[in-house]
Structures are given as structure tokens and as C-alpha cells.
Length: 403
View (cartoon, rainbow, N blue to C red):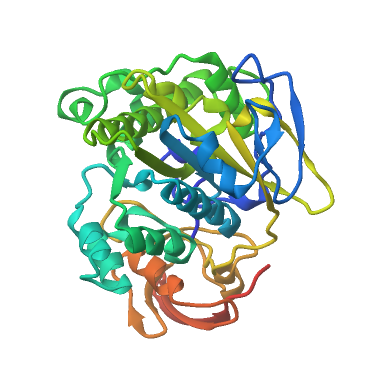
């Protein structure tokens, strides 16, 4: 199962399903820092470039380039193992340099229980227990395997792990009503300052959703687009606020919060970094892993990140996807909303409107159980699904195969 692209995910009324990996991210736009926005870089695989100094650096020099940063945002494409490897390398470099690292996670809201993470760091629970008690599959739709090395690194060095995001239900509400329509208790769960008016951020948003103008992105009416921008800005500001709070709570001058987050929240320092200025006067630095074809450097804008890191383009997700999305509410949580074209689910004959009863004879009561089930599978594995369609009960079979 897939969630929406990091910037499209603002429209939470739409069920999670997308072809994020098939979309080129807009890394060559004249946006961001005026001193770097007119400069371009031909970024090669495994090239690490400090865009402020205009020089290539090694992995050993990454920590020095981030020495004055209190918050480091490391972007990711959620199903790119290469971008997650960059995240682990940045964290490891900072640790070797003597920094006191706290890891902030986009996938968990700040109010998520911290006890499972703390028990994991102490060696008190295994991976299966961590995933269950932390609510991994409730909060996040992507396989644990992409993040496992980061969590193992945190455990090795006892690096605190904390959620920094906003409650998804409230951001969904912002996406429907706009920020001005949120009040009372819900508004109290969001940071006091959320800037939704930045025109450059709006241009970036439109570029991500595939729009052709500044006011009508992807064919959307202007009011719908603004509500999406409001929701994205709410996410950005909330993560910036909580990252800043984590720094305030740690008086150690070597403290640094490394936030693992989708690249759309990081690009051009227009997302979290811009919003965080309302909450901290310390430097917020950005690291952008950017997919590049070996032998064919990618043209990018120097302002897209403080450090840009070329990673190899990946043809397929490393871990299997099923291709189903479910209705997010209602009395039947396993009612299929959409089936991704070309997916395993589509090849099996599952259709929108079907009600999923079981997978491999394992009863399925909630959509999150599907995520956990698929996360235990490998490409090539067989699957048997039982569904009801109208008055019929059908048994459908297939194999997890890359299309």
C-alpha cells in the first residue's frame, strides 16, 4: 500500500494511493536563497556537495559542514532505500563528531507514546514489539525495513527517538476547511505561528502537484489549492516547532536534532526550515538526497539544499507493495477504495468496493493489518485473498511481482 506524495498528502480526504516513485521531484527551480538560486549543479551519483561553499565534500566532512546547525533536516523519498542510507550516514557522521543526536520522525505525531522507543533503545523489546507498541502501522504506511538501519543506529548509541509531526486528523481538517476554519481545542494542538502566505512555497507546492500556474495547481480551484497549502504549512510549522522544542529541552551545546522527513518538507528551505525561524534563532540545515542516473548527472538548483547528495535512481521499491487503499473511516475499515493499476492486487482481480476478509487465511479486521502483513512478505511470495463482492465470497490468488 502506498500513501500520497509528501506534498499531495495534504489532501487527506483522498485515500492513500499514488505513484510517487514515478514522478520527478522539482529540484531545478529558481527558488530559495537568492545567493544560490541562479546557480546550477550537475550532480553525480555519490557526489556530496556543500552548496554554500560550492565544493564537494566527503562523508567524513559532512559533520563539519553541519557543525553550527542545531536542527538538521534530512530529506527522503519514502520508498527509496538510498535516501534512508543517506539519513543513516548523516546521523553516524554527527555521532562520530561528538554531537548528541536526537532523531525526530515525521511519521509519528509529537503526542505519540515515547515509552516504546525508550524501551527499544535500552534493549528491553524486540523489533516486532516495537512496531506493535509504537503503532508503526497505524501511523505510517511504509515498510519498517526502509528505516530499520536508522533505528539500529539509534539503539547502538542510545540516541533518543521522538515524533515531531501534527495529529493527522487535525491536518486533514485543515485540508478540508483551511487553517482559518480550525479553532478551539484543535487549534491548541498546533503551533501558535503558521505562515501560509509564502508565494515561493506555494510555487513549490504547485510544482510538486503538477500545476501549470501559481493559482491553479493541477487544475484545482484556487480555494482548494490554498487549503492544501494550509495543510502542508501546518505540517511544516508543527515539525519545526517540535524540533525547536527538543533543542530547547537539551542544554548540551553539542545537541542536534536530526529530522527524517519527506523531501517536499525540506526542498529550498521553504518548508520546515522557514517555519522553524519563528521558534528558534539557531541554524536549521538541510540535506537533500537526490536520485541521479549513473553516468548522467542530474541538473539541480544550488538552493535546493545546504548539502545535496547524489544517490542512484531506483527502478522499483526494495520492499513489496500490494496496491490497495481503504476507506479511512466508516463501519467497514477493510472496504477497498482504490486498486493501483498494474499492482499485485489488480493482477489478482481485487476491485474497488470489495471487502477484504482475509489474507493467507489470516482474518483482516483493520486496514493497518494489511500493512503489517505485506511488510512480512518478499517480492515473489504468493498471496491468497478472500473478499466479498456484493453477495459473493471470492478467493483470489496471486504473487507479489514488480510491474
